Length: 393
Image 1 (cartoon, rainbow, N blue to C red):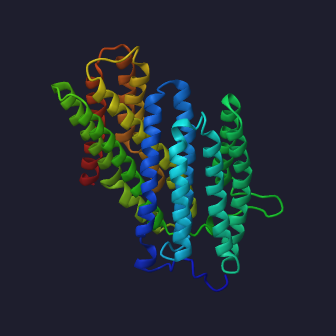
Image 2: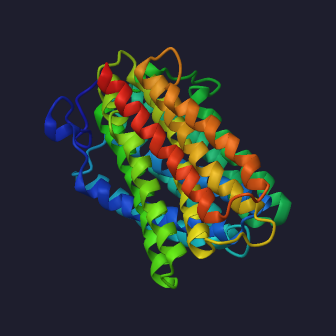
Image 3: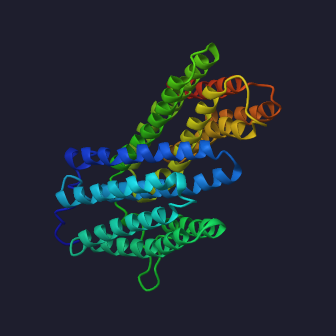
C-alpha cells in the first residue's frame, strides 16, 4: 500500500462511510431503467419476451451493482469521481431509452453503450488506483480485461440480429456473471481474493437497500399511473388497494429486521468481500426481479380485475412468479447473512403457498383480482409470521 489516492474514500469515519447525494442522484437513472424493463415485459408477456427482458435486466443490474462497488472505494464527493458518475448517468439514460427496442433497431446502441460504460468505468478506477493501491489496481485491471471480452460480444450482438444477437448477448452476460465467481482469473496475472475486496459492508448494504426502495417505488408509480387511467369501479379500487398492500408487505419482509441485521453482519465480517459477492451482488438480483414482475402483475390486475385476457397463463405466471421470486431471493439473502441453519421457515411456507395457488389459478378458479388478493395475503402472512417469531425470541 502506497500513499492513499485523493480519490479514495476515507474509511473509518461516518463521513467516509455514508451514501453520498450524488450516488442517490445517479440512482434516478435506474428508476427509469426499471420502469422500462417492467413496461417491456408487460408489452411482451410471452416466453420469448420474458427471456429477452431477463437478459436486459441482468445487464442493467450488473451495471448498477458494479458501479456501487466502485463508489464503495472511490469518494463520490471528489470532482473526477462525480464527473465519471455524470457520464455514466448520460450513458444510463441512453441505455434505458434503448431497452424497448434492444432486440430491434436499437440493439447496437444498447450493446455499444453498455460495453463502453462497463469498460470505461473500470478503466477509470484502475487508473485512480495506480501508484496508490497495488492490489486493487491489479484487480481492476483483471476486471477490465474480463469486461473487454464481454464488451466485444455486446457490440457484436448489436451488429447482428435475431437469434445471433440473443446468443452473443447471452454469452456476454454469462462471462460477466461468471467472472466474480472465478475471482477474475487472468492467465499470467493470477486471480484476486475476496480478502482483497475490502468493501465497506455498511455502505454496500445501504446501497442495495436503496435499490430495493427504487424498485418498490417504481412498482408504486406503475400502480398509481394505471389506477389514475382506469375507471374507478369497485373491482379497480379493490385491485388498487391489494397492489398497495402487496408493496407494503414486500417492504416489511425486507426492511423490518432483515436489512439491518444483514448490514451489521457484513460490517463485522472477517471477509466482507465474500459476503458482498454472494448476498448483495448475486442474490439481490432475485429480489429486484421479483419486484419488477410484481409490478407487471399489479398492472394486469388493475387493467382487467374481472377476467384474464386470452388463456391468462402469462398473467397467472406473473402474479404467482413475482412474489415467489421475491420470497426466494429474500430467504436466501437472510440465510446467507444471518448464518441460519436454513432459510426462514416463514418464507419457505410462503413459497409453498404460492406454489399451491398455481394449479388453482391455471384452472381459472380465481379471477385476476382474487388471485392478486391471494398472493398479497401470502406476502402479508409471511411478514407477520417472521415479525412475531423474531419478537418472541
